[in-house]
Image (tube, rainbow, N blue to C red; front, side, top):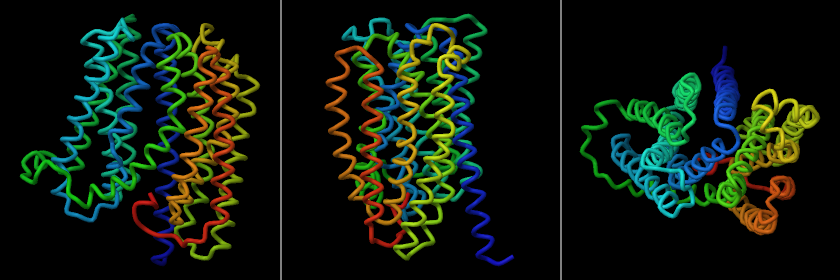
Length: 418
């Protein structure tokens, strides 16, 4: 077997591992969400989702692009432990501040100190898991550590949810602390392992991040912000504006859409991975067209049946109390078709060095998203909120596809290819 064949086989195995990992993470999340929904009901489940939404959004923004930067950081490993540990501590502190304000302002009047601590632990745990995934990519361990840092916290969360269910506990604050610690503790252990174990705690390099890492993170952070606005802002607005019952219903719709998009992206990524070995513009466009088409077809093949059986599927997984999520679920599942293409096209443009064009499109889509959400949310109809995603994802995917077809930059290595 030639060296080229070995490289191709390694790439294929890595892609299958990542795709399989995505599906496993998806399944673990759905099962955990189903358990929480059946135990807590819409009102209490909505309270939990509010904190999870704030924690997830805060964690993504607080990565400050470091997750992407550590992948391509060319400095020595011993410069990373203290800055990453400091960032983790900052995330926990900021989480305490966010949820402390929500509790003190009576915005979430059910939350006590236990809930505040749980929300902060969840924020820090998500950030640490994200940075750990970057470290695993840095070490080229896509089939081992990369999968563990994503799957283990999810598995611990599922175990925690099952234990709370068996114990008959319905207090939201207790669920928060259990899920928060189930995310934080394994994430800390895995990040320390990737940083060198106990040796990482003994390193004497400064706490401030090296300049080269800061430069890389600064470039990535713009795309992190843009992606957060497009992909996360609807959930954050719903969690901040609507009653907890509707927050829970919207979470059901988001989970269904995420399932469809993830499967479509996994199919498309197998084709898009070929871009790194293509330097001729015509071939680049052919790969992008083929990958986009396969992602759209795969997502549609899953989405259409799910749209048809949505009421029964929701009742079976989450319970009768969540069937009112049917309308929003059908719309967000429909939106998952352009979403799958949108996600892949962003990566295609980054691989071909057109990151600036991605950010420009994200600004347009972000402004449109916020404007439409501000108009839709006062109605209290989560179906209208979901309709915003249908339109924005479609517009964004069309703009990204057009940009990819006109991109003339050859593939490059570095930050924008991640």
